[in-house]
Length: 442
Image (cartoon, rainbow, N blue to C red; front, side):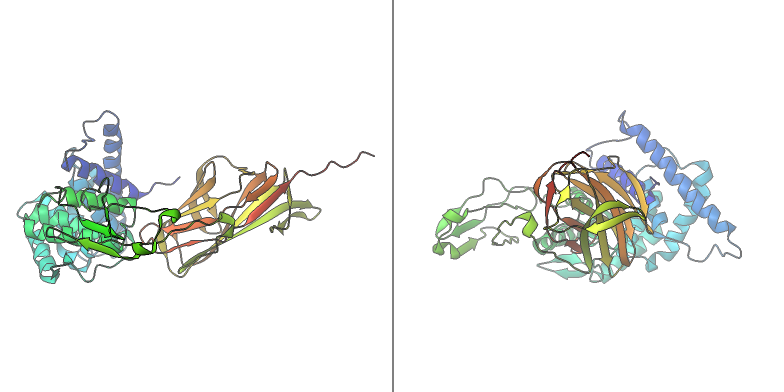
């Protein structure tokens, strides 16, 4: 599988954040230390290669803007680790891109501006551009008693540098370290928690960055608070445990416990601050009766039986009324459509219990212009895409009918990591696998 620069730099920065929180020091851990050393060498080498490639371009003006998000992220990840020092071969490249960052920061997103400020401040505490960035950020920030401190132009996009939760978390880190502004840090923490009122933190990475920001200096938002006073149908609701930081808890009632009086709900908050909640009805459905759901990202799943003919293999469409003999090859065709380019997409394709993957090994695959990592598991096959261009993408994989029976055929689900509202699932189907009767001998 090819290397992924973004993921490597993300891991190096993650190690740095753990060290900053005094949670884990990868530089002194016997298992993590060699990984960190190789990763830092990789970062230095890629930065040096960027600079060398730039200088080889005919007629290039090095004073122009040649700063990209990969170089900014590399400098940010490296700033957590002053030791070991940047490799000698990469020192000119690191100095050049730091100078570029100090000059061309106004054209970057708020996320990258925050990273640049941290890079320059950690390199030189009195760096003027770092202070200029903080001044510009402060002048453009919006303030609200309910929403806290935030930036209007920070909205969800399709690239990692546009992720709103990670942007806010990095801005909190910047105000905490560069400006040591507890008031602003507390206001920005409020936005993080308030944003979770109507949005889930979009990914594991967003959750980790949000927790990192909440654990930084500022007021102790993890300290216990007075519990909410809630009644449902006149009966008090007392949570067994509440989540630290958000105070989240969940209470469920079975269908047999529901009464008309439970339509009346009262909530009282005895101390200062904000609180929110919701009531919702959840029900279950047989997986083969699930209907398809689509956003600008849609997914179609087709099942075919592969048959051998004189003219070569042919595919015959499988339906609920079409039995498949045990031993036959089933081709799963997935049709993925998107009206915009997406990064870091996960697709999970469930399969019937009577089917087994022909290819049991995980690995990087390439079909019809689309590259992805395929990981077969017990009940489903996972596909991980680094990038999905705009358009329609068709790819296939093969299964074998192994057990006879009438099975739920499963469904496929796809979601974009950095824009999880872009998700879809295919329609659920049933699949009948039968034992083929032996032909009588002549």
